[in-house]
Image 1 (tube, rainbow, N blue to C red):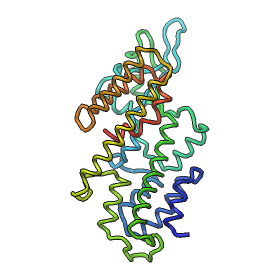
Image 2: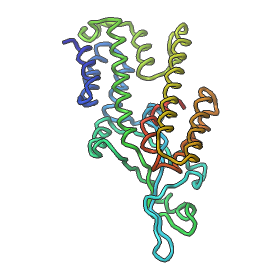
Image 3: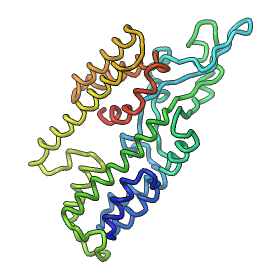
Image 4: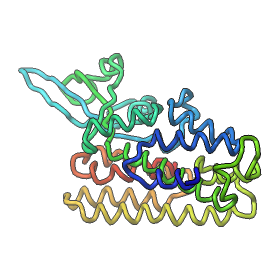
Length: 297
């Protein structure tokens, strides 16, 4: 079996660890002579050391919870922390998760949670102490953490599989024997490999050939609209109060209508704020869509 076909089979096999798939891709990157593809693989396997270079699909906005204590023995456990209670300068850092760890660590988190529920990332203790009395009146925050849906982690790994599969399929269409070519033989032109990489892995439309920009952007817009349509349908079918459902659906429609504008991020933050107020009802059904929504920002 050729290396390209072996990678394709691994990409569609849900039981194949992502780390094993990427090691096969590492061999392909060497035979293609692609430094960009190789660097991406190394970062996925060993973790991203520079947060500024972290792919958008590894960055997500999440909800936060905390334990609170008050007078006369009163307490609130696992209480939601609305972002509006936090100073604006700190909201992004506290409600954003940067998943820089190796894919094997993400796989381990998913496995340890049995594929469901959430995992946590604690707030810095100093900051919790600094703002702890300003969240709920008469109560002090003892501990706070970010809530990361496991379904979102699963979505990240699926996204990596899909990107690898699309990349390899297009390489095969250019040169079916590229995966088995001798080292340094350049079976596919460097410029072509770079274009395919930015189309399917990096997702940077600006690096495409000028003549294909409009077609690619149209395809992206259609894909994004489909995401919003599926999210809206999912929310409509979720059991929630009419008021809460109207609020969250309204914010999704605002996001959909503001794609490609500066207002999108504002509407996205508004959506996440409404979601944080109703996390128990809508959190589990929205979680699979978060990586795709974050990637649009």
